[in-house]
Image 1: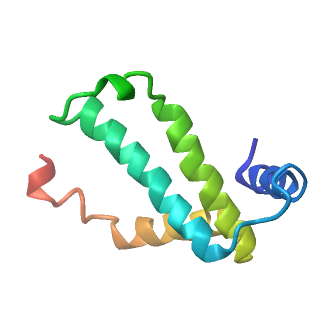
Image 2 (image 1 turned 90 degrees about the vertical axis):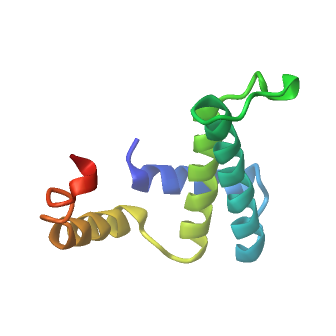
Length: 108
């Protein structure tokens, strides 16, 4: 599925199963919650923190999908075509960072 298709599927789901979008501020707060859940897993799986018994059955892929879902909700609500936005962002980074990382001593 493309990003555009995903945005369309999410919009249809929100307007049927979800009834309507939460407002943008609520969805921003939900996005922060979901990013926090990803961070929690990352800190335990790849960082120094250990899992609690209640955290052992976490699913990183599912949590990342939650982040993507809410981000796409916000994009739909604010009229942003994420395909176009990502293409422009990658072009910006390619121009701006053409030599930046190659010349970074910390990355060698």
